[in-house]
Figure 1: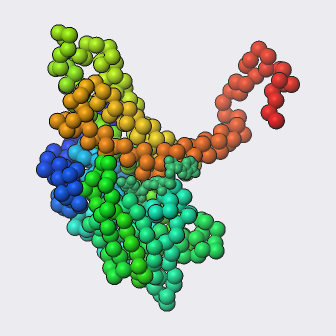
Figure 2: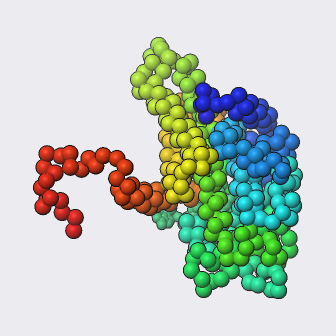
Figure 3: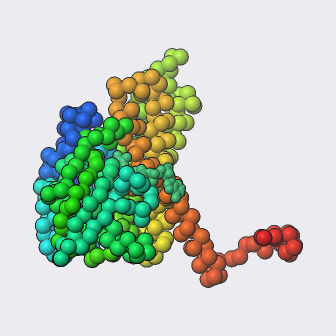
Length: 415
Ligand SMILES: Cc1cc2nc3c(=O)[nH]c(=O)nc-3n(C[C@H](O)[C@H](O)[C@H](O)COP(=O)(O)OP(=O)(O)OC[C@H]3O[C@@H](n4cnc5c(N)ncnc54)[C@H](O)[C@@H]3O)c2cc1C
């Protein structure tokens, strides 16, 4: 985030996050990438001790009670040490806790949010299924009523922190005959009888964060564990799309930032043909493009965070801005990582420098929390709606007639 936009309190918060990121042991990062660690619980414990979990969650439940701008600036710093760590930082405290605070009972807030923000427990978010992630409404995990309980059966996959989670936020079909938006319920499921997680994926990156499969075999949960009540899971899903996507965008900025720092230092020192390679435009211009892209990414994250905090942008506009931010930043970060690897030559492709890990890690960002194709779909839908509304209000000059042959209406053929 830009220091010149920050208040003193925000700078202090950023520096706290920076100090925490410096604390992360190098051995933890390497062991996670080698999958010798499958879930780094001590990371969450330390984070909880420093009160850096739940930046937007009310103080009464252990959060900081701040806004999206603060969350975004902390997420960027959290992303610096490792993308995998940032994922588990965001999933439990930002995504699941927000849903419980908004839609859960006081009992769930006390029993899940409070210990989670202390770093004592972890909760995973479980939407994706083997038969499809983009098609949320195509979920086949089902729950049937049994007295005042629900019995859940099905499977979820690619769940960050499945290995290590104490609670699972699970979407299940509770009324298969209802229209898609009224068919699903979002249950908080404890690790209990019938719940099994399997750490089975050979991931390209983002390793060691417990991403696994979740098997639910006749799992009994009381109805009061349903967030927002039965058949109202869609609202929870829609709420969570903001922290999922804006959070991903912000932490991706942080994760790619070291690649640019390393590439800048390297190209200043590495010599070829008798001079530092930064002097060759082919190298220096790539680094310049990276610096420009990083600032454009930050501008977008910051503006979207401000838009949400302002409370002045409507839900459709926020949906578009968040989706744009996720797509733009994750693609920008990929270009930055790729350019940084390129200007390092062969050594950039080795594990002598961490750029190859950063590149492997952040590739996920274009796929998860809704693929970038799904982001395009949302942007398209919301933009056309917004455009239609804007045309009706006549708020700005209509430029269409400002063409020499604008009166040739016979030439304006639409069908
Ligand atoms: C490491 C990792 C961690 C993850 N963590 C979690 C987690 O914690 N919780 C969770 O619930 N999920 C998680 N996911 C799942 C992730 O969000 C999904 O993989 C993603 O949403 C895509 O779903 P899919 O894999 O089923 O692909 P599909 O939905 O099968 O999509 C395949 C391709 O088709 C395209 N496509 C599909 N539908 C459309 C459409 N309508 N228009 C245009 N293109 C379309 C997609 O863009 C994609 O390119 C994780 C995934 C990974 C790899």
